[in-house]
Every structure is written in structure tokens, then in C-alpha cells.
Length: 153
Image (cartoon, rainbow, N blue to C red; front, side, top):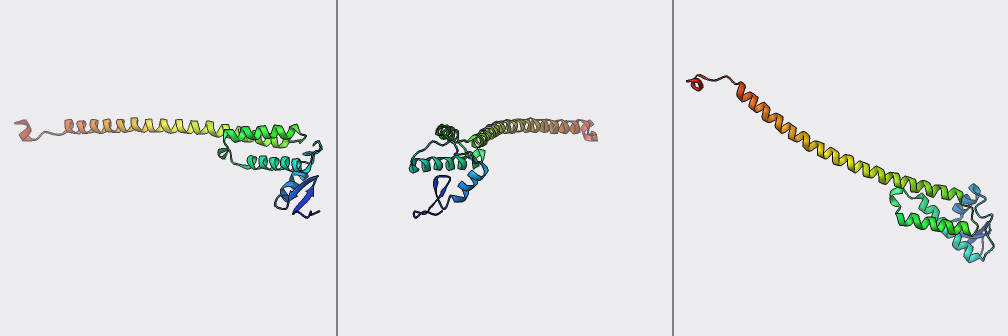
């Protein structure tokens, strides 16, 4: 039911029309989300819902887009929401997966940089060997050449 202020009531939350589908999907997929929420005034409930939507936005980001600070803030916000009665095991799991993926990406990035450094070093060694081989070939050619009459006399 639409209210006169451009919001609709969904599970006791006043939700702006731009967020209706997102909030509906949250409660459809995770009906327990606000089932233990302690009674509070509408403004506070909506503030908590906005925090929840912000956390979901963070969970949607690619691991490389997340900073350590954002992940810490997300964890703190999640604990605050759980503390007031939200059931968010599903979101906690997603955020933890993001943390793991970020750490793996960082580790993978370190490994890739190390491999790149090793390749550059091996290319230098190979180049030095190629120069040495060319010098040996030149010396071998010069020592194996036939001498002319003038060279001998």
C-alpha cells in the first residue's frame, strides 16, 4: 500500500518506490531477516534498513573495488544490525566470501608480480647467453676459416 509520502509499507518498513523491488526480494528470499527486530520508531527502522541496503551494495562490489576499511566498516555495521535483531547469516556469508576473494586476489597479485619479476630476470639471463653464443659462433667461424696463400706466406 502506497503512503502519501512516496513510500510503501513492506514488512513494517517504509520503503521509497526506488527500493521497493530490492526490499521485496530481500524479504522473499530471506523472510527471517527482520523477524526478531525489536520494536522501534519508524525513522530508526528505516535507518537500519538503509544500512542493510548499503551492506548489500558493498557485497555486490568486485573484490578489487573493496578497501580493507570498507570491509571493516561493513563488518561493524553487520554486527550492529544483528545486535538490534536482524537475522543476517546469509549476508554475513556473502561478505565473508568477498573478504576471502579479496585476500586471494591480493595473494594472486603478489604471485603474479613475483612471476613477472622472475621472467624479466630469466630474459636477461637468456639475452646474455645469446650474446655469449653469438661471440662463440663468431670465434668458431674465424678459427675454422681456410687461410689464403697470402696469409701463409
